[in-house]
Image 1 (cartoon, helix red, strand yellow):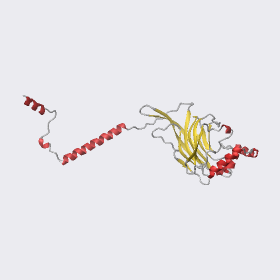
Image 2 (image 1 turned 180 degrees about the vertical axis):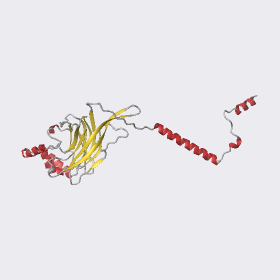
Image 3 (image 1 turned 180 degrees about the horizontal axis):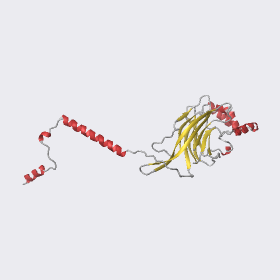
Length: 296
């Protein structure tokens, strides 16, 4: 009885058994099996990768936000200008200076090889004492300044500054400016130049505007947090001048952007496009070179 039940269980099978002559192992059969397994694993991995991959969907809408601030992340190197002569300024759409910017800016002194030799932290780069300067190159301002040159005298600290900057120029010092400017989201511009200097002092240092070399490298210029796939068109931009000088003008169109992850997390940021112009100096110019970034 026990033997009979054992045989019954052994013979119990939901599928028909293959005949004995079909169970012989052959090399061709093994090759077919291996090829089949490889194909199945490949298809499985392909489908798994497709399932886990994401793609970006672009949508456009009207920007209804008002009164927000715009963070401007800058990281630039001026290899031919010492930090003592560089200043950062911002002007809103009405031409007035923004004097209460929340800034977090560092200036790094660089030697002729680009190595850091000093650090300066600037809590507010906007020069309130230069609010009367017209940074849109008002020629009348420069004419008035030249008329007053003979009335100015140099104190000891100014003379020391001139000697220090001249020595830095002789040593080939440069400056790296990086940090964040927090400005109002309105049309305006910010610029990096030697406009923070008194025009007479600048003349004493450089001997003329044509000798101000505003060669620069833009390592990073962005308007908010980064997200996967973002492209900032001015990153790693190099503009080097040889035996000439002038003004670089970048006209930037800022577009508010929201990046939404699959997890529903939202990153508010900005994209931008840019048009670039260069105005070389000539003998009749009464303006001083600089790098201007006009944002709309």
